[in-house]
Length: 114
Length: 117
Image (cartoon, rainbow over all chains, first blue to last red; front, side):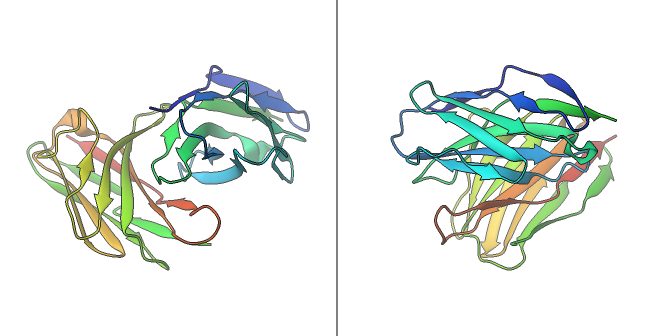
């Protein structure tokens, strides 16, 4: 069984500032992928960033970066230079490398203030 | 990038009627598709895995006779909510993994908002 935990229901950040979203997980799989998805008010799910568990280097996509701590089973997302368009619900997700089924966390609502 | 569509985007129906929601992969073949249900400000709850040419696999607690899934082709899966009741009102999302590449990226449909009166 896989579990993903997001302990921050809501976060607020000033435009241009940095915000970090936390995520912890549990899995018995040795090979797996971790993801952060964004769901804006339109409710379309958008992939923000992914991390292969076998890679030690933290993934980065423009203003989005992760801090992957495999031993601690932690996968946090940092949003730098926050923009109003970053306002959305963010979901941490996990899947085994040999499966397509995703396990989602409860989500964190991020509000960027002007 | 790959696109997954859903139709309709919004549907209102009367209690007791059935509603069909379509999920299409527009530029790739999907032997597997997933159906989720999402309540406001909550996470996506996996309902079932749709398998082309075979029966769907339902998650525990999901009534298979209530939520009928048909995956008749490599690009189309349908979810039929039978005898809908107000408690079935929700946002339904489908997703499809595109095989190939390094990690088989999963693509999500835009969702269908169902309101049962």
